[in-house]
Image (cartoon, rainbow, N blue to C red; front, side):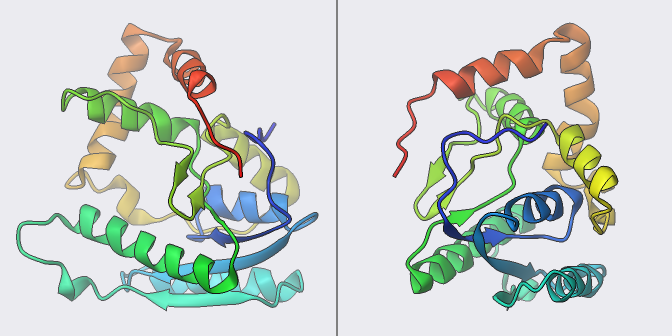
Length: 207
């Protein structure tokens, strides 16, 4: 079951990557909400394939407000990791598009993301979960495990693209996901419940 924290606004921008998480969220929310779909093309090998997936879905489901933006990866500044650069550039674009429409933006961050962030940040001395709000962005799906998005996609035949870069261990996030998280679950099989409690106990401002 897909869980929503708080209430979804009637209109919002949905940042959609073409992966199973955001495509399932898009399929879930389009039925009752007016959605601007935002795809940010990182100009990687699979980026055009993911863009086509989103475009075809929007066409087939009569979603007319689709925004395509690009990140110039060659502009990554010295001393900054590509992960950090891409994240910062994505949020600049998301904030700009949301502000231009005077609506909030929604991302498909889920419980697995919060577990990974907790483990990664704990190793840097400041354990935290993915926050509910960041400027124009809200993350209402933090209590939903990724497996629920996969189940939704299978049940509702939602098209999506598996990003091959998600398995590349040179990215810190992937190393945490594929190496550190399994060890953490071995030590604490209930870590998802632990993080869920932290999310629920967090002071959240609903606007």
